[in-house]
Amino acid sequence: MRKTIFLPAVLTLLCIFLGGCSIETDPAADSDYVFYYLNSEETSLMEEGYAPEEETDTFLLQDLTEKLNDTSARSDGVNLLPDEVEILSYSLEEDGILHVVFNDGYSELSLARELLVRAGVVKTYIQVSAVDSVRLFVGDTELTDSKGNALGAMNEKSFLEFSGSDSDTYQYDTVTLYFTNADGTGLITEKRRVKHSQNLQKAQVALAQLAKGPLEEGRYPTIPESAEVLDLTIADDTCYVNFSAAFLDYALDISEELPVYSVVNTLISATGAGRVEILVDGKSDVTFGETMELYNFYEYNEDLILNDSE
Image (cartoon, rainbow, N blue to C red):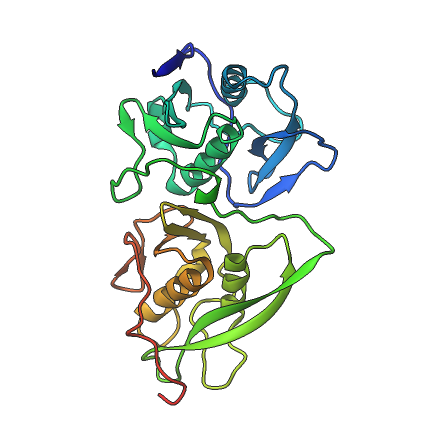
């Protein structure tokens, strides 16, 4: 039997865009539950301990929804949702899928902002024991990706997150990077073993190394070192990477598809995602160089890969 609980439409939200996909943890929090919000610079997700009065599924769903819709100003950050967005209702299906319905204001979110708000909302609800996954709707329409495909049910594994906090614990990862050859006609791989904070995910490390440029002979840079990754999210087998505008500083005398596929191949190798969409300052309707439309899902391109001798 379907259980539906509707919230008053007068509840409003306060929140602003999350520019990075990092999560900082309140070290004082000692709770089995957390609640997500934005840091004061609006560049990362943060979490704080959440101690509910009851731990029943019914109470948690209602209480978490009310917290998401809370208009109270924070002293240490801002709420997850912007004030034009509101959760109108939710319903928990027998298969453990939670349907969450937003008002039309959700459709006005920029793509980069929506990706990270989506991650925070899903991770908030997935803590409820009866919730296995979450589907998001705007009115009667299920949330779609930039190509109009329904996103379907999402859980904590749908999102790749980075931590911006420092740590004294490090680990090693081997990343595969894709640089151009001397003639600018193809890509040459370079494997690099990197020591990094365990709070940083492999994909973030790989892009940072790609921007630094090659270390081995016969390889040349493909993207500007100043290109900053604003956020990176994985959802529905797609890796969304949001670069700063410096990514468009296309001054290399090489085929313009090489920088794009150097990023795509590097990310797919690091994450295992099936495809990549590149954003610039949160926008997907951008042309890289003269002809490379970034409003596309790009898959791994093996045809561009050359041997070291080529």
